Image (cartoon, rainbow over all chains, first blue to last red; front, side):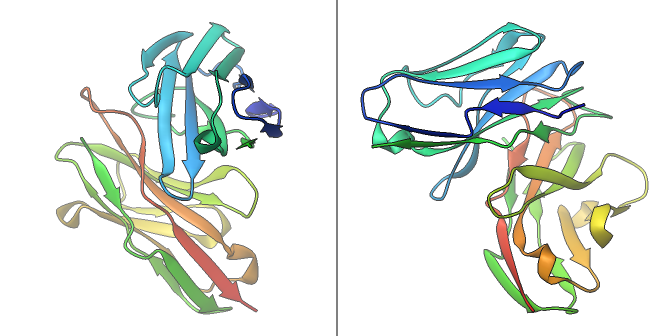
Length: 116
Length: 115
């Protein structure tokens, strides 16, 4: 398996623009997670899906952020409009289970977002 | 809600020195515990995990961790570090049940190994 795939790897955009980050989880994994990593706040869980359904989005910072999972092999995280404080590395992760055995999460390479 | 504390923010060691990184968590119930490593510019990779059974867990690259339930701790150890171990290390806890939010990460410990 190729692991979790994310695109783009780097994104530089201007304030006010829409940004779309993409993720392909490991095939067969029922759970998909979006994280944001910054120096100030560390690694934060934004939202996670189970079988394409959003389960907990309480970590999404504000209405400018939205996430979708139209099918089992694809998810997007959208920021509209983007702001400089959104600059961070965004990781996608997937897991077979949420709890119990086989619940470890596998992370993608991340998207480094810079908003000017 | 659960929380994870990593007391050492930055550790600097010479090659061949022994390593112990502290991790304490707060959650009253059953937990799964993880250590992830993030090499410079790369994504998080799983080093090892505790699910149940033997509290001494062995992971990849010679790392091990011991779960001490009475101390709510899951410290990471390696008897002899190498320059290639330079990375950031994250401890994480996942409650086994209940409505608590999912995997919670500590703030990370940056390990620098001097050649």
